[in-house]
Image 1: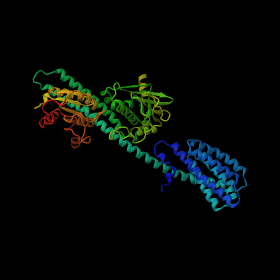
Image 2 (image 1 turned 135 degrees about the vertical axis):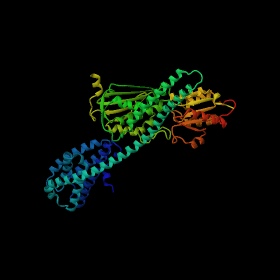
Image 3 (image 1 turned 45 degrees about the vertical axis):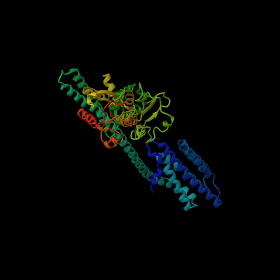
Length: 429
Length: 134
């Protein structure tokens, strides 16, 4: 049995759902603790000793803790646990001499110490400590006072043992999680690679065709028996040069994408550089359909430490979605704006479309959800893009309030160290 | 019997440079050309102009070459359509014939190959003699 899976919530397989997994862990902790406490209440009733007020106190507080942990106030549940632990100590201290006060101390002190010493292992320690105490009480029902005198030593050794056990399971869980994430990333990378490859083949073949055809036109003109039209030859040669330059831009854009973006290092890169990477790959497509692309913003010249290829991949994805949506419209346009707002780099991609319908909006970021025809899109673009943004500590959001279709790439600048802008330094010098 | 120099051909291609030069080359051979940037625009041209042949790229926005082919087969079963592909995986010969095309040409297309293909369509009477279908 994969015991370690119990320590990670199923939802945490997807990057960035730490809050949810914390909530699930908190509620699991509450369930186990409650079972133990209930056992003591039943034991008290059956043995005729009745219930100690401290046990009832723990029962009620734990119930509240459980309810919190199941709602969206899960963070509050953790805070509540802390309060409960402090209160438990007070109650426990007032009940000295009682057999169950030791239990209350254990239930309370364990998590408190863990909270201070080993914050990450709080939940693991708490569950394990409860189980050990319950087991001990089951074996020695009358040993409450003995336990009290030995409890500091028990507690410390237990802390150490469970700390080691906890970190073992935690690292196994982390490894499993990392493995799952790598698998998801790899498959999505392959999917987006496939999507890109077919696009690039087309992007390159068409200009290549134009070059071949222009060369043939020149040949044809030169073989004319009548007077050779110099103007026609020059036009074709100019066209060949222009198209070849366009191809070189596409290839340079492609080269940056060919790098392994998963293990891509975080480097200082000017915002305009990764935006250009994306524009070089798809700009011609927009131009050929008469779609205006304008790029603006005060953060274009600033350099930040990001993963360049991954960010341009996200942008390319947004631009391609825009293209598919608006290329049929007359007077279509796309704007890309890069500005700093509230400690974030916000890159806004807006197109002339009039937003996305409600039904689609709610599913936009679902993996494999697509409105494109079969074979046209994998439905992974936006979900992978969101994953990339999350891995930068940022987010990708659809702006419902905008009258035009708008997506925001938000990148916190405090997560990634802001590097001095070599570009603006050069400008200043 | 029709000959290349009196044909009316619609070229459908989303790359403007390629579209222009293809038309220029065909015009030099005496062909009257019409151009469209995608399938939808091609249908608009077809609704107004009678043509003998449609040369169309497959990968295009709005309406791609395969969709265009289906529309033409539905509306004007007589007009032959030759598709430009970027690779075999995009569309194979058998599949394209099943869909009703008159052949595939792989990009980049040499003008000699294109003219040869057009000539063979005339020889096989795929491009019909007589008044141009509209």
